[in-house]
Length: 413
Image (tube, rainbow, N blue to C red):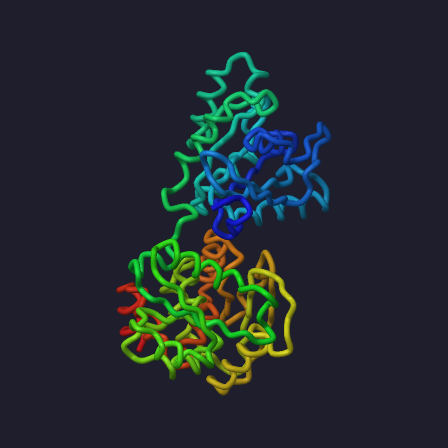
């Protein structure tokens, strides 16, 4: 895909961290071979994390994240540091930038430990290497202390940049940014029917990102995409000369679509496909069954990964609370959050209901799931929850061919 056509959520996210004036912005400019970031000798030029979508050969489509210095000072500096550390949750690979003439600090070593605890692949970048005479000695000592891959560069003089790119490639997991969506579940010439409601919540003149990505994935794998609305699904299937292999629907249309999709045709939703691609499917399935354990007075967090204009019957703030309340018959309290974090004091919640995460990368969604697991809070996404509430969760998981989920369903039921 080109720079403009690759969604940010499927790009490799490369976070740059380090102390003020270590040269993070200069490294970004050297990697991209352009003046993408502001460079200044004044400490603390970068204040908030800055996300820069790039196409970098030979890495490919990625997002470079420039962060504030981890040695910032004062109450405002502490807020900047916390924002920089928040970036860890969406980082596929971290670059720790260190001034070679100063060497590793306690802050640097502490951050390396955070990388390791969070299992984030990382490379230590010794910047300004041209300013030290005993380069081999500095490199050897740094490797001994850091115990991670190290690349020596001079960002301002463009020294060692190609070696740094290669080190990034060597350190990235092979499947980074390439988690399966649909392609491994279908074959060439299969007919896949996409059910896309066009209601007041649908953006005018275009499809939403999950619908676009699934359509593209079908075409990339040589299958045939047929698009229809929920009220014409039955006629669409009847008019096809070949039986569809799979129907994929917007989760909100499950109630009608399940009735109009014959039992011998596989059925799932866009949101469930993204649960598989972006998160831990088994953990999210367990979260659906957890609504049976809700009690009067429990608090539920409904979290979304992006902000958008909300309609009167918005799925997150209106429909999800209504459906859960009807299913459980309990007196529940619902809180809502959207954006880059799920908020604080998560331990107060009995359940987290999350959106499909189409605007988030896998690292960000997995960080949220791991946080929920750490606090022993069940978490489920919209599509899986809605399928469960409609009594068809087992059917909607069948197309994914994930034995672990089938075993899980048997155990829980």
